[in-house]
Image: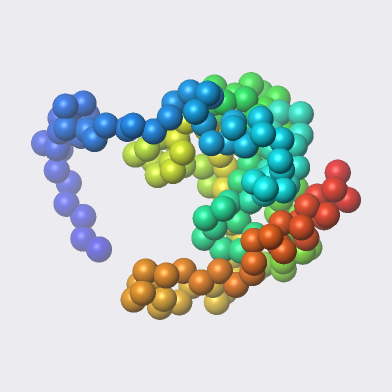
Length: 171
């Protein structure tokens, strides 16, 4: 891929007049994750485990089977808004997720990432979440390109029950 440097576009991308409006919820009151925590029906929402400062949940729209997310319990949209204890616990939970996923699903690798802000790719930018995505050598193929369809090789509910049991034993 070729790159072209266009410094004259800086004004355009930093000018709020040209930016699309972000109409998504910004408050705890209308945050899907906060509501799921409040409803306290963990199995319905695939919440695997709650900890002191964070929780682990399965992604309902996974890239791959076993796609987990780690979120602070408090409604915070940025990493720097989290306390040292929250950040430390989330980092430890990344390790816990990888350990359990290795044991239970036997992936050959992982992607771990944080998308902050709408421009950074955050699907729900108002509540910070860290993705822990198990990967296998053969988990990509032609289907997303040709059919706009991504096959997920394992079922969400079955995987939830398997991982929940492993998390309960682990900690």
